[in-house]
Every structure is written in C-alpha cells, then in structure tokens.
Image (spheres, rainbow, N blue to C red):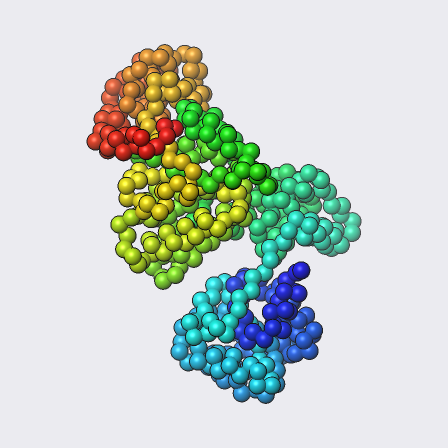
Length: 490
C-alpha cells in the first residue's frame, strides 16, 4: 500500500470532504493530479491569492473566485463533477456562511455530479456541523528504503547537472543518514539530502551530524522539545547508584525490538529544587545510550483555544518519531496539577498525556521530575502509568567527594592536588550545583589574587555561603518525610 492508493480509495469511497494536515503541497498536487486521471475527473486548486485554476493548466488566467463565498457558490452551482483542492482554507472554517456552503456541497455529493473537496493546511479544525461529512488523511512518512532511494535520486540529480563532477559517498554514512532521517516528511528529507550533497558533493559523517541537527529543528520548530543527542557523557555521573542499577536492569527490554517482558514505561524523580534531578534525568538517557528530549511545559501554553493541546500532541509525536529515546518532563507540576479545574488547558493536557501514555507502542521512556509531588493528580503518579518513584536526596560524603573531583577535572585542575576528603566533609548539606558554584567562586578569588586555586581557597568559599540543607531546611524535611516509605532512594 502507498499514499496514492490510499488517497484514491478514500476519494472513491464517496467521502465528500477530505481534510489533510500537511505542509507538502507540491507532493499532494502531484498525487491528486494522478488520481484525477484515474477517476477521469477534472482537478482544480484554489488559493486566496490566485483564485480557482485547473491543476493541469496552472498558468491559466486567474478567475475572479478568490473570495471563499464566491468560490463555494461556484462549486455548488456547477453541474459537472470535479475534484477541488482548497489550499490554506483553515482561516475561513469558523465563518457560518462558509460552513453552510460546504455542508450543502457535501450533502449534494450523490446528486449525479459529485464535487469532491480536499482541504489542505498545516492545521485543520473540523467544524462540528461537518464532522459526519468529512474524513481525514495523513501522508505516510518515508521508510528507510524510500530514504535510500531519495539519496540515490539526489546524488544522480547533482551529478547530472555537471557530468564532470564525481559524487562521493561513505557507505556507513549513507546508512546512518537514512536511519537519522526517519520521522521527517519526504519533502523535508529530500531538501536535507540535497543540502548535504550540494555542500561538498559527498555524504560523510559530518553531513550526518548536520542533517541530524536540522532534523531536530524541523521536528520541534516552536522550541517545545529540546534535544540532547550525545548522552554518553551522563552515564557515569556521581552517585545515584540505585537508580543506575534499576535502569541497567531494564536497558535490554527497553531497547529490544520485540521485548519478552513488558517494555519499561518510565519513572518519577522527586527532590528539592537544585538537588540533582536534572542530572539524574540525563543519567537515565546516558545509561540507556539514547537521545534525551526535554519537554518544556512553559512553552506549551498558548492563548489560542486548542493550540496548547496541539503543541503537546506534536511534542509527543516527536518523541514517538525519535524512539528509542528518553522524554524528560521537567517540573511537570508546572503544567499539570491536581488543583486545576475540571475544565481548562491543564486538565486537557493531562487527558492527552494519559491517553498517549496508555496507548503508545514506541520505545519512549518518560522521566518526570517534580519538586512538589503532592500537587500532581493521583492518576498520573499511580503505578502502571510510571514504573517507580525515586527520591533524589542531597549527596552524601562519598558522592560529594566524587562531585568535587568531576568539577575540578572539568576546569583543568588536578583533583589529586586537593584534599577531597576535607572538602567532602565541609560541604555537608550542599547540592551538586552548590559545590560547582563554590569551585567557580574559588577560581575567581584565586585568579583575582594571581594565585592558583587550592584547598584553602575552596574551603573559604564553602564557609562563606549557606548550603541548600540550611536555605531550604523546611522544604527538604517535608519532602523527606513524604518520600519515606513511598519512594525508592536514587
């Protein structure tokens, strides 16, 4: 089966109005032109700028049917069958006159001169009056075989333009490129491949990296999802031994194409703000060895009705496309809380998220982080939605010692030159972020005095600030009391 066949079947089935959400107008025009030949039906396309034109003669002089009421009255009055492709008609679907005219055209479909309407736009909300007269169609995304064919076509096109040039390709890079382009539309895939080839007449590992970055931008143009593809460096973060062991036991079933056990669903990370939950989320992706996608709930909310839920659906669809991956829902209580009303975007977001969590089949592992789990709805945190709840507490002495070693090394300093045991003891109550900031402050202080940073300078900086355990004592004790007996220590 392919798009041409499926689209033809839908149009032959007697559906008077077809809704297609897509940005691939040229490809749809080509498909519908071929279907018109098969159905022996004239095909017309309409835009607000050009009016109505025959698809096989696009250069025909523009008609005076640019305004939607005139267009729809013309289609309704014609006595000849036809296929009418209406491009970017979505702004006009909230006008009662347009909706009524569309309904009358659709209801007259079986009167001997079927007029099929195909509405194409980036987003289409079907008016309630038309739902029983409409069907939706979605273009398939290209599979690996089709992507390899696109690479061959674009390589031949590049070489044909100048026969004296020679195309170069690294076989492993071509294979990797075809894998990394899974999930984008055929038009976007062709454009990305063409850009990679045109740059230097070759497909190499560097092209794969650039195309992958461009793919991420395409998949989340509104910035709702941020991508962290190279996660291996997070696999060995300090501490979190129980969490790492738990994840390691589930790595094989999560990555398996057809796991014998139930595929792991995800986990909740509870802890104080700045206590290391973000690093723990990154560590999960690092242990699995998969990309990390961060869902920003702050960017989801939109003033327009329905846009908030659409952004969430798009974000979850992006995660499905990127699978296997970890989807990090950071500070999830900011987007979904138990005290939200029965209506409103918060409840609708919760409904969309729970539906996706229940129905998804892709290898997407959810890591939800929260500073206040009591504010979350119980249907989200119950077992079955997520596999486990971990409590990320402040680091103990041994972990603090490792944190000092990691951050000193990152700044080009030899940890062996420092008394790590003394630093670990004095930094009791500090979070990892606090330890890092103490090192940064020590570097500034030492260089201001034209000295090399040493243990004494670090100890001075630690004594000069209050640890998180003191600053947020009440909140930490409340979280520890709630987590005791309800969560697993990370």
